[in-house]
Image (cartoon, rainbow over all chains, first blue to last red; front, side, top):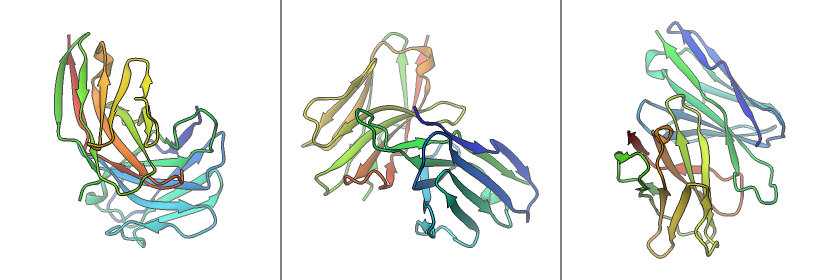
Length: 119
Length: 116
């Protein structure tokens, strides 16, 4: 199946710094990518929908100035957590809209996730 | 109202036995898709099975089957012949509409533990 990568897989940073997380679709073009946040033992919460070449659509309660999303190409979307604080520590997962292929049910391919720890 | 409800926070099953993980959904759309994902401790989301709202037959993928009861709006996952490697979090998800770019709504998940 299609592959989505995320980099880095782990990041530890000091409070107040900014962290950039990359999400890449490796063997297909993704016009739409999604960013999720997951706290321990909780579900995935959609943060924003990222469309190539346009501004991201943020879910209610997600600060767009704090979580900057850039989808500059059909294979790359980035999430920048600006001025990170300990409460931003979480597991961030991206997914990419899959191309429609006959016989393939998956419509989103998920990245492996990025664990962020803010000290 | 919650789009996806998973009422079992944790489940235990004996190895080689079958287990059913519950999922109910809420939508007014006629066209939608239902998905199950497995999330082991590594965090990756592993796609297991899909059921389209217009599919008349229950979906099956190896040891996984989806018990789709449209009138009850339920989409329970059945895992047959459980294996130790099946221990993980399981999430039910729904995509409304036909557009594959529409967002997924996830349930709160069920933690499955397979006992040797």
